[in-house]
Length: 188
Image 1 (cartoon, helix red, strand yellow):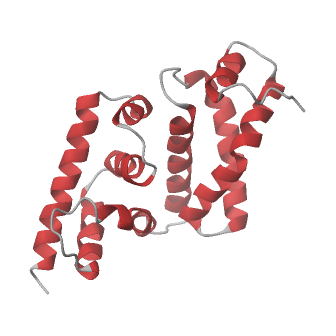
Image 2: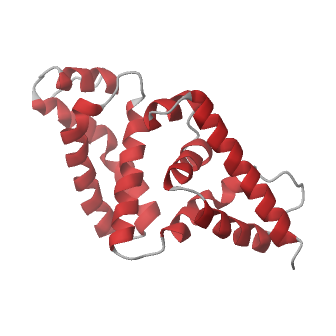
């Protein structure tokens, strides 16, 4: 086992990208295996499947390290891989992905609604409708910003889009949430 735990994630990845000893990948695995399983479990609600997805994600990370941009944070890039892998799994299993994403976003959506008093049922109805109307990229941006608490800059780097595009998509999503909340809360 390598003892270079004092290296940052980005330093380990840079070393691996430069042709460093592949055993350095053990550092990444040791640091993030539990995190990956926990995040996968929040999507698939099954421990065994979460562990299988973790192994798939670790393989993807290893195979895609060459695509990691050093201006992005490793953990943000990792979260993007986790999200896409879990959503792909749910699609293949024909489960309703918007239900899982709704559960993950529900608490954070309360902060996005402009009204002070919230009706939880109206919020759920609006959120389910919203999630049918937005793109997978917008869903990922919402998860990164409001669930994972990433900065605009981190989202920009992970998604490969401009800062203004991140802000615009977040703004549009918030606007949709408020319109839908208003529509559904007035139709009790």
